Amino acid sequence: MKKENYRLLISSLYFNYIFQGMAAIILSQNMANLKIHWQATTAQVTLVMSAIGLGRILSLYFSGYFSDKFGRKKTVLIAIVSYMIFFCGMLLTSNYQVAFFLAMFGGISNAFLDTSTYPTLVEAYPDERINSSLSVLNKAFISLGQFILPFITRYLLQQDLFFGWPFFLCALCLLINMFYLLFARFPKSKTIVKKNTDVTKTGISKNRGKFKIDGIALLIFSFVSVSLFNIFILWIPQYAESMQVVSHENSLIFVSLYSTGSFISVFFTSGIVKKGINIPKFISFCLLISGMSLLLMLIYPSFMTVVIAAICIGIFAAGGIWQLGLALMLELFPKKKGKCTSYYSLATSVSIMVTPYITGVLSEQGISYVFWFVILLNIIGLLASLVIVHRYNKLIKRLVLG
Image 1 (cartoon, helix red, strand yellow):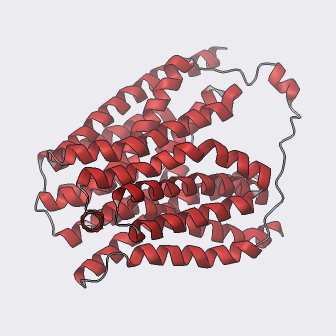
Image 2: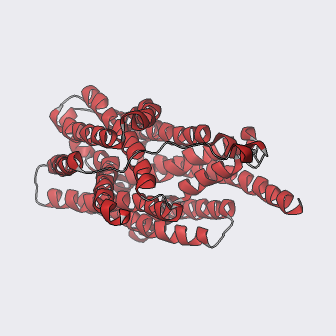
Image 3: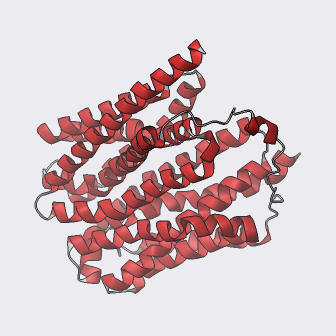
Protein backbone atom coordinates (compact mmCIF):
# COMPACT_ATOMS: atom_id res chain seq x y z
CA MET A 1 0.00 0.00 0.00
CA LYS A 2 2.84 2.33 0.88
CA LYS A 3 4.46 1.72 -2.49
CA GLU A 4 1.32 2.91 -4.27
CA ASN A 5 1.05 5.99 -2.06
CA TYR A 6 4.60 7.18 -2.72
CA ARG A 7 4.98 6.22 -6.38
CA LEU A 8 3.96 9.67 -7.68
CA LEU A 9 6.17 11.41 -5.11
CA ILE A 10 9.24 9.37 -6.10
CA SER A 11 8.52 10.04 -9.79
CA SER A 12 8.39 13.77 -9.04
CA LEU A 13 11.68 13.63 -7.15
CA TYR A 14 13.36 11.78 -10.02
CA PHE A 15 11.96 14.33 -12.48
CA ASN A 16 14.28 16.86 -10.81
CA TYR A 17 17.30 14.73 -11.74
CA ILE A 18 16.60 15.20 -15.45
CA PHE A 19 17.45 18.87 -14.90
CA GLN A 20 20.43 18.06 -12.71
CA GLY A 21 21.78 16.19 -15.73
CA MET A 22 21.06 19.17 -17.98
CA ALA A 23 22.63 21.60 -15.50
CA ALA A 24 25.90 19.63 -15.67
CA ILE A 25 26.28 20.19 -19.43
CA ILE A 26 24.17 23.23 -20.34
CA LEU A 27 27.05 25.72 -19.96
CA SER A 28 29.48 23.66 -22.05
CA GLN A 29 26.78 23.07 -24.70
CA ASN A 30 26.40 26.84 -25.05
CA MET A 31 30.00 27.92 -24.47
CA ALA A 32 30.34 29.92 -27.71
CA ASN A 33 27.15 31.90 -27.05
CA LEU A 34 27.98 32.47 -23.39
CA LYS A 35 31.41 33.85 -24.29
CA ILE A 36 29.63 36.50 -26.35
CA HIS A 37 26.83 37.01 -23.81
CA TRP A 38 29.27 37.56 -20.93
CA GLN A 39 32.03 39.11 -23.09
CA ALA A 40 34.36 36.51 -21.60
CA THR A 41 37.21 34.23 -22.65
CA THR A 42 37.04 30.42 -22.69
CA ALA A 43 38.97 30.25 -19.40
CA GLN A 44 36.51 32.69 -17.78
CA VAL A 45 33.50 30.65 -18.93
CA THR A 46 35.06 27.47 -17.52
CA LEU A 47 35.74 29.36 -14.30
CA VAL A 48 31.98 29.90 -14.03
CA MET A 49 31.50 26.16 -14.54
CA SER A 50 33.93 25.52 -11.67
CA ALA A 51 31.64 27.53 -9.38
CA ILE A 52 29.14 24.66 -9.47
CA GLY A 53 31.67 22.44 -7.70
CA LEU A 54 32.49 25.21 -5.23
CA GLY A 55 28.81 25.64 -4.38
CA ARG A 56 28.51 21.89 -3.76
CA ILE A 57 31.55 21.86 -1.47
CA LEU A 58 30.27 24.82 0.58
CA SER A 59 26.81 23.31 1.07
CA LEU A 60 27.52 19.56 1.23
CA TYR A 61 27.63 19.24 5.02
CA PHE A 62 25.00 21.86 5.82
CA SER A 63 22.47 20.34 3.39
CA GLY A 64 22.54 16.99 5.22
CA TYR A 65 22.06 18.69 8.58
CA PHE A 66 19.21 20.81 7.19
CA SER A 67 17.48 17.74 5.73
CA ASP A 68 17.57 15.89 9.07
CA LYS A 69 16.61 18.95 11.10
CA PHE A 70 13.89 20.58 8.98
CA GLY A 71 12.63 17.74 6.79
CA ARG A 72 12.95 16.38 3.26
CA LYS A 73 10.23 18.57 1.72
CA LYS A 74 11.84 21.88 2.70
CA THR A 75 15.21 20.57 1.54
CA VAL A 76 14.02 19.55 -1.94
CA LEU A 77 12.14 22.86 -2.33
CA ILE A 78 15.39 24.74 -1.60
CA ALA A 79 17.09 22.56 -4.24
CA ILE A 80 14.46 23.46 -6.86
CA VAL A 81 14.56 27.19 -6.10
CA SER A 82 18.37 27.11 -6.28
CA TYR A 83 18.24 25.42 -9.68
CA MET A 84 15.80 28.06 -10.96
CA ILE A 85 18.19 30.78 -9.79
CA PHE A 86 21.00 28.98 -11.59
CA PHE A 87 19.20 28.50 -14.92
CA CYS A 88 17.69 32.01 -15.07
CA GLY A 89 20.76 33.69 -13.61
CA MET A 90 23.05 32.45 -16.38
CA LEU A 91 20.97 34.45 -18.89
CA LEU A 92 19.94 37.48 -16.84
CA THR A 93 23.53 38.53 -16.14
CA SER A 94 25.92 39.84 -18.77
CA ASN A 95 28.95 39.65 -16.49
CA TYR A 96 30.94 36.47 -15.88
CA GLN A 97 31.84 37.48 -12.31
CA VAL A 98 28.14 37.69 -11.39
CA ALA A 99 27.56 34.47 -13.33
CA PHE A 100 30.26 32.83 -11.16
CA PHE A 101 28.32 33.71 -8.02
CA LEU A 102 24.98 32.55 -9.46
CA ALA A 103 26.52 29.31 -10.76
CA MET A 104 27.24 28.33 -7.15
CA PHE A 105 23.48 27.87 -6.75
CA GLY A 106 23.82 24.97 -9.20
CA GLY A 107 26.14 23.25 -6.74
CA ILE A 108 23.97 24.15 -3.75
CA SER A 109 20.91 22.64 -5.43
CA ASN A 110 22.92 19.52 -6.31
CA ALA A 111 23.76 18.93 -2.64
CA PHE A 112 20.26 19.72 -1.35
CA LEU A 113 18.61 17.51 -3.98
CA ASP A 114 20.76 14.51 -3.02
CA THR A 115 20.27 14.94 0.73
CA SER A 116 16.49 15.15 0.31
CA THR A 117 15.87 12.48 -2.34
CA TYR A 118 17.98 9.57 -1.05
CA PRO A 119 16.62 9.72 2.52
CA THR A 120 13.07 9.99 1.14
CA LEU A 121 13.62 6.81 -0.89
CA VAL A 122 14.78 4.92 2.20
CA GLU A 123 11.89 6.23 4.31
CA ALA A 124 9.27 5.51 1.66
CA TYR A 125 10.62 2.02 0.89
CA PRO A 126 12.44 0.58 3.94
CA ASP A 127 13.21 -2.69 2.12
CA GLU A 128 16.92 -2.34 1.24
CA ARG A 129 16.57 -4.26 -2.02
CA ILE A 130 13.85 -1.89 -3.23
CA ASN A 131 15.46 1.41 -2.21
CA SER A 132 18.84 0.27 -3.58
CA SER A 133 17.34 -0.46 -6.99
CA LEU A 134 15.51 2.88 -6.90
CA SER A 135 18.77 4.68 -6.08
CA VAL A 136 20.32 3.25 -9.26
CA LEU A 137 17.58 5.00 -11.27
CA ASN A 138 18.97 8.34 -10.12
CA LYS A 139 21.86 7.99 -12.57
CA ALA A 140 19.46 6.91 -15.32
CA PHE A 141 17.42 10.13 -15.03
CA ILE A 142 20.60 12.24 -15.04
CA SER A 143 21.65 10.46 -18.24
CA LEU A 144 18.20 11.06 -19.72
CA GLY A 145 18.59 14.81 -19.21
CA GLN A 146 22.05 14.74 -20.78
CA PHE A 147 20.65 12.77 -23.72
CA ILE A 148 17.79 15.21 -24.44
CA LEU A 149 19.56 18.58 -24.09
CA PRO A 150 22.02 18.24 -27.02
CA PHE A 151 19.11 17.59 -29.41
CA ILE A 152 17.32 20.72 -28.18
CA THR A 153 20.49 22.80 -28.49
CA ARG A 154 21.17 21.40 -31.96
CA TYR A 155 17.65 22.28 -33.11
CA LEU A 156 18.01 25.87 -31.85
CA LEU A 157 21.32 26.24 -33.70
CA GLN A 158 19.91 24.86 -36.94
CA GLN A 159 16.86 27.14 -36.76
CA ASP A 160 18.97 30.14 -35.67
CA LEU A 161 16.83 30.62 -32.53
CA PHE A 162 17.75 32.17 -29.18
CA PHE A 163 20.17 29.88 -27.34
CA GLY A 164 18.63 30.66 -23.94
CA TRP A 165 15.30 28.88 -24.43
CA PRO A 166 16.51 25.62 -22.75
CA PHE A 167 17.54 27.63 -19.65
CA PHE A 168 14.05 29.11 -19.29
CA LEU A 169 12.39 25.78 -20.15
CA CYS A 170 14.31 23.99 -17.38
CA ALA A 171 13.33 26.68 -14.86
CA LEU A 172 9.67 26.50 -15.92
CA CYS A 173 9.50 22.68 -15.64
CA LEU A 174 11.08 22.82 -12.18
CA LEU A 175 8.59 25.52 -11.12
CA ILE A 176 5.65 23.31 -12.19
CA ASN A 177 7.13 20.33 -10.35
CA MET A 178 7.64 22.48 -7.25
CA PHE A 179 3.91 23.23 -7.07
CA TYR A 180 3.17 19.51 -6.88
CA LEU A 181 5.84 18.95 -4.20
CA LEU A 182 4.46 21.82 -2.10
CA PHE A 183 1.30 19.78 -1.48
CA ALA A 184 2.79 16.27 -1.71
CA ARG A 185 2.82 14.00 1.34
CA PHE A 186 6.32 12.89 2.30
CA PRO A 187 7.07 9.86 4.48
CA LYS A 188 7.93 10.61 8.09
CA SER A 189 11.63 11.06 8.80
CA LYS A 190 12.98 8.16 10.82
CA THR A 191 15.68 8.51 13.43
CA ILE A 192 18.21 5.70 13.37
CA VAL A 193 18.09 3.84 16.67
CA LYS A 194 21.32 2.20 17.74
CA LYS A 195 20.05 -1.25 18.60
CA ASN A 196 23.14 -3.12 17.52
CA THR A 197 25.62 -1.75 20.05
CA ASP A 198 26.61 -5.25 21.04
CA VAL A 199 27.51 -6.04 17.45
CA THR A 200 29.77 -3.02 17.33
CA LYS A 201 31.46 -4.05 20.55
CA THR A 202 32.25 -7.49 19.21
CA GLY A 203 34.39 -5.90 16.51
CA ILE A 204 32.31 -6.96 13.48
CA SER A 205 32.41 -3.38 12.21
CA LYS A 206 36.18 -3.14 12.64
CA ASN A 207 37.94 -1.32 9.80
CA ARG A 208 39.57 -3.77 7.40
CA GLY A 209 41.79 -1.39 5.46
CA LYS A 210 44.46 1.22 6.14
CA PHE A 211 43.16 4.67 5.26
CA LYS A 212 46.62 6.01 4.42
CA ILE A 213 46.81 3.42 1.64
CA ASP A 214 43.37 2.05 0.74
CA GLY A 215 41.44 5.19 1.65
CA ILE A 216 43.72 7.56 -0.26
CA ALA A 217 43.71 5.23 -3.29
CA LEU A 218 39.91 5.28 -3.29
CA LEU A 219 39.83 9.08 -2.91
CA ILE A 220 42.14 9.36 -5.94
CA PHE A 221 39.79 7.04 -7.82
CA SER A 222 36.78 9.15 -6.80
CA PHE A 223 38.47 12.29 -8.15
CA VAL A 224 39.60 10.60 -11.38
CA SER A 225 36.39 8.72 -12.22
CA VAL A 226 34.26 11.87 -12.02
CA SER A 227 36.88 13.91 -13.87
CA LEU A 228 36.92 11.45 -16.78
CA PHE A 229 33.31 11.80 -17.80
CA ASN A 230 32.87 15.43 -16.71
CA ILE A 231 35.80 16.61 -18.81
CA PHE A 232 34.69 14.40 -21.69
CA ILE A 233 31.15 15.77 -21.92
CA LEU A 234 32.48 19.30 -21.44
CA TRP A 235 34.99 19.23 -24.30
CA ILE A 236 34.07 16.47 -26.75
CA PRO A 237 31.90 18.77 -28.94
CA GLN A 238 34.76 21.26 -29.32
CA TYR A 239 37.26 18.45 -29.98
CA ALA A 240 35.09 16.89 -32.70
CA GLU A 241 34.57 20.28 -34.33
CA SER A 242 38.25 21.29 -34.16
CA MET A 243 39.31 17.96 -35.71
CA GLN A 244 36.78 18.68 -38.50
CA VAL A 245 34.97 15.45 -37.69
CA VAL A 246 31.50 17.09 -37.73
CA SER A 247 29.92 20.56 -37.81
CA HIS A 248 29.34 22.57 -34.63
CA GLU A 249 25.63 21.72 -34.26
CA ASN A 250 26.23 18.01 -34.96
CA SER A 251 29.15 17.83 -32.52
CA LEU A 252 26.71 18.19 -29.62
CA ILE A 253 25.22 14.77 -30.40
CA PHE A 254 28.33 13.01 -29.06
CA VAL A 255 27.15 13.96 -25.56
CA SER A 256 23.88 12.16 -26.30
CA LEU A 257 25.82 9.06 -27.38
CA TYR A 258 27.75 9.20 -24.11
CA SER A 259 24.47 9.53 -22.19
CA THR A 260 23.00 6.52 -24.00
CA GLY A 261 25.99 4.41 -22.98
CA SER A 262 25.74 5.67 -19.41
CA PHE A 263 22.00 4.94 -19.24
CA ILE A 264 22.41 1.36 -20.45
CA SER A 265 25.45 0.74 -18.26
CA VAL A 266 23.64 1.68 -15.04
CA PHE A 267 21.48 -1.46 -15.32
CA PHE A 268 24.29 -3.60 -16.77
CA THR A 269 26.66 -2.73 -13.92
CA SER A 270 23.96 -3.35 -11.33
CA GLY A 271 23.30 -6.83 -12.77
CA ILE A 272 27.00 -7.76 -12.87
CA VAL A 273 27.61 -6.71 -9.27
CA LYS A 274 24.65 -8.79 -8.07
CA LYS A 275 26.35 -11.85 -9.58
CA GLY A 276 29.33 -11.35 -7.27
CA ILE A 277 32.01 -10.00 -9.62
CA ASN A 278 35.32 -8.85 -8.09
CA ILE A 279 34.60 -5.12 -7.85
CA PRO A 280 38.22 -3.79 -7.71
CA LYS A 281 39.15 -5.83 -10.80
CA PHE A 282 36.01 -4.62 -12.58
CA ILE A 283 36.90 -0.99 -11.78
CA SER A 284 40.42 -1.48 -13.18
CA PHE A 285 38.99 -3.10 -16.32
CA CYS A 286 36.62 -0.14 -16.83
CA LEU A 287 39.45 2.39 -16.45
CA LEU A 288 41.61 0.42 -18.89
CA ILE A 289 38.90 0.37 -21.58
CA SER A 290 38.15 4.08 -21.04
CA GLY A 291 41.83 4.99 -21.42
CA MET A 292 42.27 2.87 -24.55
CA SER A 293 39.21 4.42 -26.23
CA LEU A 294 40.50 7.94 -25.49
CA LEU A 295 43.97 7.07 -26.78
CA LEU A 296 42.47 5.68 -29.99
CA MET A 297 40.47 8.88 -30.47
CA LEU A 298 43.55 11.08 -29.97
CA ILE A 299 45.87 9.08 -32.26
CA TYR A 300 43.28 8.50 -35.00
CA PRO A 301 40.75 11.36 -34.83
CA SER A 302 37.73 10.46 -36.97
CA PHE A 303 33.97 10.25 -36.69
CA MET A 304 34.10 6.55 -35.81
CA THR A 305 36.80 6.84 -33.12
CA VAL A 306 34.95 9.73 -31.45
CA VAL A 307 31.74 7.65 -31.49
CA ILE A 308 33.63 4.70 -29.93
CA ALA A 309 35.14 6.96 -27.26
CA ALA A 310 31.76 8.56 -26.44
CA ILE A 311 30.08 5.18 -26.00
CA CYS A 312 33.00 3.67 -24.04
CA ILE A 313 33.24 6.63 -21.65
CA GLY A 314 29.47 6.44 -21.11
CA ILE A 315 29.53 2.71 -20.43
CA PHE A 316 32.81 2.23 -18.59
CA ALA A 317 33.51 5.59 -16.90
CA ALA A 318 30.03 6.89 -16.10
CA GLY A 319 27.96 3.75 -15.65
CA GLY A 320 28.23 3.31 -11.91
CA ILE A 321 31.90 2.63 -11.11
CA TRP A 322 31.98 5.73 -8.88
CA GLN A 323 29.21 4.16 -6.78
CA LEU A 324 31.14 0.86 -6.71
CA GLY A 325 34.16 2.73 -5.36
CA LEU A 326 32.02 4.19 -2.58
CA ALA A 327 30.69 0.71 -1.76
CA LEU A 328 34.31 -0.50 -1.45
CA MET A 329 35.15 2.42 0.82
CA LEU A 330 32.27 1.55 3.14
CA GLU A 331 33.19 -2.14 3.08
CA LEU A 332 36.79 -1.42 4.06
CA PHE A 333 35.93 1.25 6.66
CA PRO A 334 32.58 0.29 8.24
CA LYS A 335 33.38 2.05 11.55
CA LYS A 336 33.46 5.49 9.90
CA LYS A 337 30.87 5.24 7.14
CA GLY A 338 29.63 8.82 7.45
CA LYS A 339 33.10 10.36 7.52
CA CYS A 340 34.37 8.20 4.64
CA THR A 341 31.32 9.01 2.52
CA SER A 342 31.95 12.71 3.14
CA TYR A 343 35.62 12.39 2.12
CA TYR A 344 34.66 10.42 -0.99
CA SER A 345 32.01 12.99 -2.02
CA LEU A 346 34.41 15.83 -1.25
CA ALA A 347 36.95 14.39 -3.72
CA THR A 348 34.17 14.44 -6.32
CA SER A 349 33.27 18.05 -5.53
CA VAL A 350 36.91 19.13 -5.80
CA SER A 351 37.03 17.53 -9.24
CA ILE A 352 33.90 19.38 -10.36
CA MET A 353 35.41 22.62 -9.08
CA VAL A 354 38.98 22.48 -10.43
CA THR A 355 38.88 20.47 -13.68
CA PRO A 356 36.72 22.86 -15.75
CA TYR A 357 39.14 25.72 -15.12
CA ILE A 358 42.29 23.62 -15.67
CA THR A 359 40.95 22.24 -18.95
CA GLY A 360 39.76 25.71 -19.96
CA VAL A 361 43.33 26.99 -19.66
CA LEU A 362 44.66 23.94 -21.54
CA SER A 363 42.10 24.39 -24.34
CA GLU A 364 43.56 27.80 -25.16
CA GLN A 365 46.81 26.01 -26.03
CA GLY A 366 44.96 23.40 -28.09
CA ILE A 367 41.91 21.23 -27.52
CA SER A 368 43.92 18.00 -27.82
CA TYR A 369 45.88 19.01 -24.69
CA VAL A 370 42.64 18.64 -22.73
CA PHE A 371 42.29 14.99 -23.68
CA TRP A 372 45.96 14.21 -23.08
CA PHE A 373 45.33 15.57 -19.60
CA VAL A 374 42.39 13.14 -19.33
CA ILE A 375 44.72 10.29 -20.38
CA LEU A 376 47.12 11.32 -17.59
CA LEU A 377 44.28 11.30 -15.05
CA ASN A 378 43.15 7.90 -16.36
CA ILE A 379 46.66 6.46 -15.81
CA ILE A 380 46.74 7.84 -12.26
CA GLY A 381 43.30 6.36 -11.58
CA LEU A 382 44.31 3.01 -13.05
CA LEU A 383 47.43 2.86 -10.84
CA ALA A 384 45.29 3.67 -7.78
CA SER A 385 42.80 0.95 -8.75
CA LEU A 386 45.62 -1.61 -9.09
CA VAL A 387 46.72 -0.76 -5.55
CA ILE A 388 43.14 -1.41 -4.44
CA VAL A 389 43.04 -4.73 -6.35
CA HIS A 390 46.27 -5.92 -4.70
CA ARG A 391 45.21 -4.86 -1.22
CA TYR A 392 41.65 -6.19 -1.58
CA ASN A 393 42.83 -9.61 -2.79
CA LYS A 394 45.15 -9.89 0.24
CA LEU A 395 42.21 -8.97 2.48
CA ILE A 396 39.96 -11.63 0.93
CA LYS A 397 42.67 -14.30 1.35
CA ARG A 398 43.17 -13.29 4.96
CA LEU A 399 39.42 -13.56 5.66
CA VAL A 400 39.16 -16.94 3.92
CA LEU A 401 42.11 -18.34 5.85
CA GLY A 402 40.61 -16.99 9.04
